[in-house]
Amino acid sequence: MPPVRDLPIGVFDSGVGGLTVVRALMERLPLESILYFGDTARVPYGIKSVSTIEHFTAQITDYLLGRGVKMLIIACNTMAAVASGVVKARAGGLPVLDVIEAGARAAVAESHSGAIGVIGTPTTVNSNAYARRMHALDPAVRVYSQACPLFVPLVEEGWLDHPVTRLTAQEYLRPVLAEKVDSLVLGCTHYPLLKPLLQDVAGSDIHLVDSAITTAEQAAQRLAELDLARRGDTLPDYRYVVTDIPLRFQTIGERFLGRSLGAVEKVEW
Amino acid sequence: MPPVRDLPIGVFDSGVGGLTVVRALMERLPLESILYFGDTARVPYGIKSVSTIEHFTAQITDYLLGRGVKMLIIACNTMAAVASGVVKARAGGLPVLDVIEAGARAAVAESHSGAIGVIGTPTTVNSNAYARRMHALDPAVRVYSQACPLFVPLVEEGWLDHPVTRLTAQEYLRPVLAEKVDSLVLGCTHYPLLKPLLQDVAGSDIHLVDSAITTAEQAAQRLAELDLARRGDTLPDYRYVVTDIPLRFQTIGERFLGRSLGAVEKVEW
Image 1 (cartoon, rainbow over the protein chains, first blue to last red):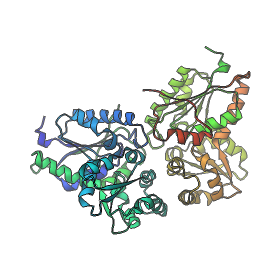
Image 2 (cartoon, one colour):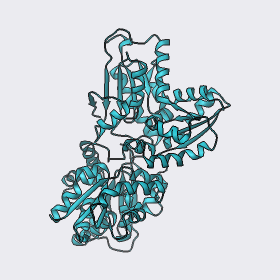
Image 3 (cartoon, one colour):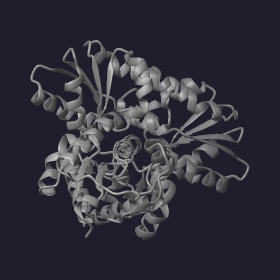
Image 4 (cartoon, one colour):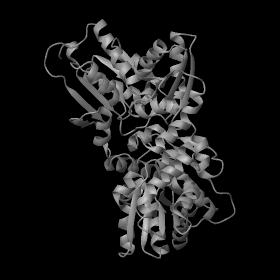
């Protein structure tokens, strides 16, 4: 067993979306090794029931704990919204971060008006998890949420700057923008790929909160606090474990990661 | 054990889409009982690998055979495209129908020019199953296929007649229409809900082949040939088994079925 400091950070998601968090971690913490788990055989979680999501989340957590990690990052808004308790209960003393906590913190810290918009999958929005976490940090904020179920398939189709995507974004954002929000949380790991288009539709005076970036920032802080940051000058190790390797996996994965994917391992359950 | 004639027809799909086939069966064969299985915990199949789809298909087939059915209908284009052999191998002598076979037969019979378009999910289109089956029936037909990955999420969003859907359809259908097809096979059970919009975009001189309707027609023929049609005047029994009951399941299911869903049973695997 290597020293805890040299263990990888475990990052997991229902599919490829969490690779936007891996990308942000690689940039913010270039010495850290990363073990990514994507449940590509059962993606998407956003349309499944809470009990099913809890069951899948527990399985993934146990798998990563079995492989050995020093920190767990829930890089899936749906799992963070409805099953973060499951992860914490199984993780023992291990630090557990998630994209909702990180996004909520950053939005509350950065909003001037206190009116904050949140966009995400139907399950994330219906869970009301962002609003609850933001209110715990500042009871004065007003949160306006909007489910955007078509954004994930549009990103996976690669229509990142397409008239269909623009028209869809105009329709989805209209009610949130009408509330005069000054910040908009991208509450799904797929959405950072739509950032230029969403900034354009929302207008340049609205601050977009990218939870991949805010999660990487929180991870850096926690590793420093716990004295768990990796040292030395050897190259970090990046591993990708998935439950299925579907068509176009490499292409889509590399679009999220912003670089080549390296070796992908398929686990049989 | 009731007489074989009184057993239900087993219909299965990766999710709710196969309910368009159930609807067509209820209308064409109003005396038949139906046992529907939707794998809602693992939907969609269209983005998964062939080996994963085969594994899931075998599980569902065995479940329906265990419950007792007189015929199996694969109401999922993805399963029909890549795993119909798995179903037939397990079904023994039981008749097995599928939406691709039915759609291919109808398209070949009805096309005058021999130029036929097929739209479906990426897995269905990449499998080339429609083209293979049509060529087996008539080697002279020319088949032009187009994957339309956004249609399923658009239908599930309920945007059946929305500018975004229209723009998407125009983009997807352009290359197929350029080939001067006279028939267009709706190669996914979600697509019948887009029929009015697709007819409008394609133009009134293009014949849309709805595989839900053609499958029900084939089922009626096979039951008559095998002398397996149910008789008498007692009401048929409709049962719906799913692996998960997600958010909005009832709403979406009833949109596909065109009537109220009745009791839904969740199976635990």
